[in-house]
Image (cartoon, rainbow, N blue to C red; front, top):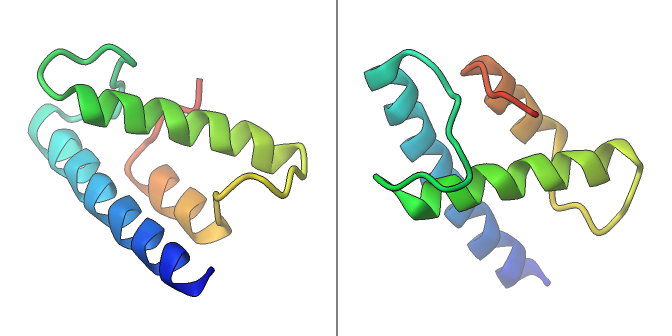
Length: 80
């Protein structure tokens, strides 16, 4: 899995940068699942929420990392 993890990490970073741009423009990170201006960002945000729930349960299928959680918290990410 090294290549997959690297690819997955790069994809996460790209989506995170889109989230940061959104926060910088609008001043909040409340992105709905069905976000008409950027559906892929809405889907990504939803996926982060689901991964976080799995992470909290100690589920090893979660791809969420402690560093990703820190980065999301830094921009005021809404976990619910």
